[in-house]
Image (cartoon, rainbow, N blue to C red; front, side):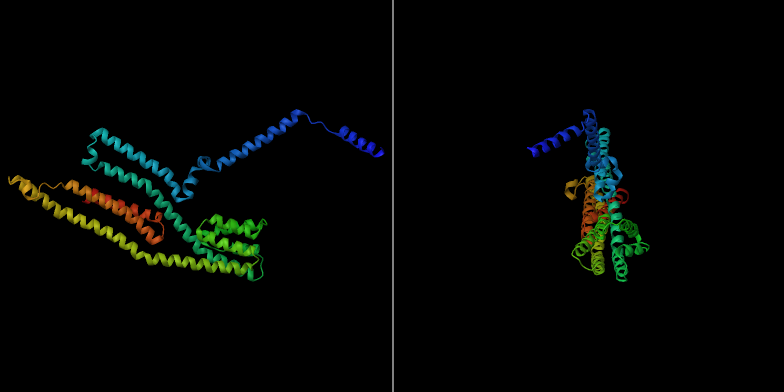
Length: 346
C-alpha cells in the first residue's frame, strides 16, 4: 500500500504543477502556423508553373530557347489574323488569291514566330560551346593543385583566380560554396547543374560517383578532364566534317533560286508574249500555247522556294549540329532570302 500511496502522491503533484494554457493563446499559435503555411504555399506556387511565369516572365522565356515560342507564336498568329482580316475587309476574299499581300503577311508571321528562337538558340549554343571548351582546363588545374598537396577547397580557391572565359563566374561560385564548408561532392553537383550543359552534367556525374566510391580525387578530376576534352574534340570534328554538307544544302537552294529567276525572266516571259501575239493575230490562243499567267507561275515558284528554303534549313541544322532546332536560323535566313528575291527582283 505504501507504493500505491507514493504513486498517488506523484500523480497529484503532476496535476498540481500542470500549467493551463489559455485557449486564446492556442488559437493565436494555430493562426500563426496557418499563416506561415499559406505563405509557403504561395511561394511554392510562384516558383512553379504559371505563377513562376508571372513573377519573372523574361527569365522564363529566355532560360530555354524553345520557351520563347510561348510568346512569339501567339504574336505571329495575331499578326496573321489581323493582316488577313484587313485584306479581306478591304478587297474581298478573292484578294487572297490574286495578290501577294497575304503571302507577305504569312512570311512576316513565320519570321516573327521563329526569328527569336533562332537568335536565342544561337546564343545558347555559343554559351554551351564556350563553357565546354573551358571545362577540361579547369578540371586539370584542380587535379594538379590537389596533387601538390592542397586540399580540394584550397585547390578550387587558387584556381578560381584564373581566367576560364565564360566559366569563370561559375568557378568563383563553386569556390564560395566550398568556403562555406559545403562538401566537395555536393558543391560539384551544384556546379554542374548551374552550367546546365549535357557535357558538364555528364562530367560532374562521373566525378561525384567516383568520389563517393572512394577514388582518388585528383585521378577522378584528371579522368573527367580527359573525357571532356575528347568529347568536345569529337563534337568539333563532327561539326567540321558535316560543314561541307551544310554548304551543299545552302548552295543548292541558291541554285534553285537562280534557275527560277532565269526561267521566269526568259522562258515564261517569251511564252507569254508569244501566246498573247497568237491570240491577237486571230489565230486563236489555243492553237499555239494559250495565255500564260506569269503572276500565277511566279507565285507558285515563290511558294516552292520558300518551302524548300525553310525545310532545307532544318535539314542543314540536323546534319551540321545534330539538332533540328539549330537549323531554324538557316531556315529563317533562307526564307527571308526567298521572299526578298521574289518580292523585289523576280
